[in-house]
Each structure stands twice: as structure tokens, then as C-alpha cells.
Image 1 (cartoon, rainbow, N blue to C red):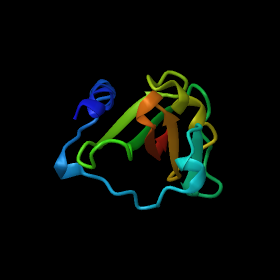
Image 2: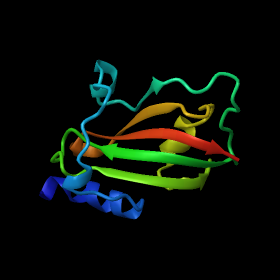
Image 3: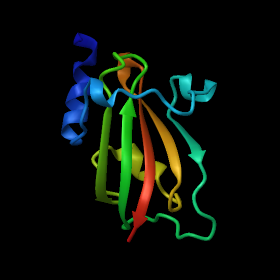
Image 4: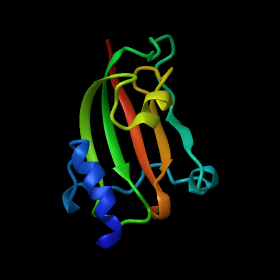
Length: 128
């Protein structure tokens, strides 16, 4: 549990719910690029063709799931968030969601020191 403490703090700051009820097994397995120690962005589901792309300053409603292979499975997060692109508290997410389309799902892997990576799956629900 000690290793999970920074993850819990981050999840709490983001308003994510966590616990065994929301335990999350990724629908899309992690690939080799994601398992490396580097920052990664992977499109899991393309967005709707012809829909508007996310740009800096847009207000986005998104479903976010967060997990890490280095912490117990029951410590995962899920939240619906509305935020202005460019002002999300997890700074790397701001660039990673640029140009996403409506209904697109991307997984962003952010290195987190000795704890490995924290993954965020971002599903764009609306763009305003």
C-alpha cells in the first residue's frame, strides 16, 4: 500500500473515485510502447469522422479512467470531468488530448518516478 500512496493522492486531487467496485482491467491491452518508461499516447478508438477536433481553450467533457500496473488492481479511478483544454491539472493531458475528436478514446501514459507509469484513458464526450 505504501507504493500506492502517491497514486492515491493524485487520484484524490483529480476527484477520481477509486475502490474495488471500480477496479479496472483495460479493455485494450498495454502494448510495448506503453510499457516502456517513456511518455506515450495511443489512440484506442478513433473519433467520429467529420466531427470537430479539440483545440486549446475548448471546454471538453470527458470520461477519464486512471490506473497503473505498479499498484494494486483495486486502486483505479474513474471520473467524468469538464475542463478547459490547456488548464487541466495534469499538464501532460492538455497536449495529449489536442486534436481528439468526439467519441475518441486515447490512453496517455505518464512516467511517475520509481512507480512506473500512470495511465489515463480519455474518452471525449462533448466539445464546446
